[in-house]
Length: 245
Ligand SMILES: [Zn+2]
Image (cartoon, helix red, strand yellow):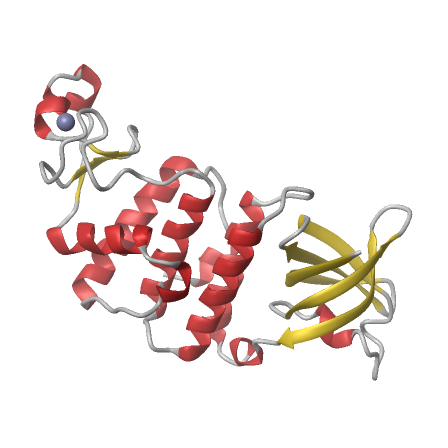
């Protein structure tokens, strides 16, 4: 079996081997053994390093896959050389692990992660903004996108910038007033610029996701908003987040 994928995690097994988790286009997130990966001069050692991207030939063993050979396209070596960058990349890997599993193909997730790691190494967009973009698009891929273009109740556009996370998007004043629950729920009120930025993030083609910037104030506003948004939908603590403020 041949798959295209990226190494999300790698851990040592026995004296010389490694167990890796691969995010693959064809088979979703799978784990595989890489025999001899920790031996010096092993041809497979490079294929078992986190964030390595390439084509992997696998054969099925008794309880898991084994890597037979790999054709590596990119290592993302620069990421390992910068602690902050590594923290972000590790968080992105952890977040996509949360949403993916074996035998559910993940082409969108793989492309998003690949493009995002490229953006980390390119350093043209700040890492906090990269994080907002990545989180937003991943939530969209997983069917948890917010409605940020029109009131989710009446469909009218340009009526409000109030997001009700319990409802999954914008709700205009009129609709919120009609609903007993929403009258008690404090909305997340976005600034015009922040709302526009999120709309851009949701509608751009993936290869153009990291080609704009925003002011530090908007960056901060978006980061706080994303925190509340993800908290509403994801009930898990991510270890890698301890290193990111
Ligand atoms: Zn409405």
